[in-house]
Image (cartoon, rainbow, N blue to C red; front, side, top):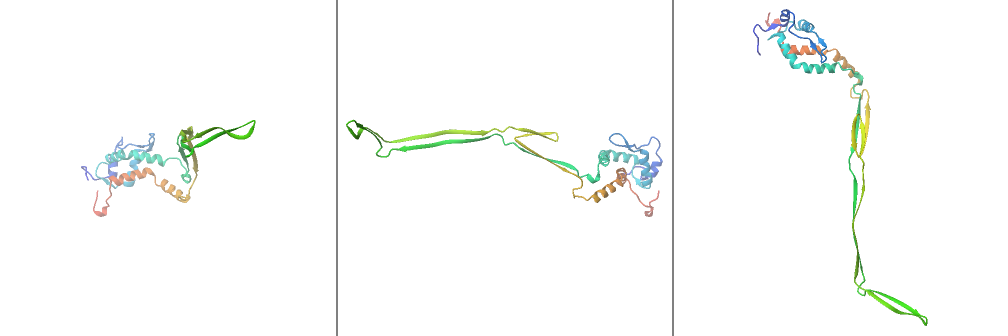
Length: 236
């Protein structure tokens, strides 16, 4: 670990040497509102960790720490101060949208029936008979004999179809387009049984009684400072 000249040095000793303007800036949120003034920041470090030591100037170490962690701190700060009811933190609306895009339906029927008629070996004989005024007994007038086969063929295709028109449905400001659309919205409210109300209240209490800003400062000390008791023979 690199140690600057004249260091290690106690934090209270370093802060006592500061003059105006202070070498440490206020901590501000995203709207430039002051979360903690520089003087209060130094007072907290002085009164809480005054007898801790650093191997480099406190102001330099703080600048490096805050520069690398400030963006994450602001996100945590925004979440920390968000308005919500801890007993209803499971509220929500769940929307399920089902879309069907099958397109037009068509059905094609192929015709291929062939009918063949055969007269047989003797053929088909057609006989016309007549009678006369002087005889009522029928006698052959004409005779026709048909032989061979006849074939009738039914061919071609028939296509039937169902045309589907698309529809639009807007759900939560989002428009869906499909042949068929189904939307289902489920509202959830309050404790859903995952966590008891008592546990949520306890978590809220523990969070609020452990301020984020002190966690931020304590982490800085944990990363860049150390404490050695005098019982180990370390004196100023």
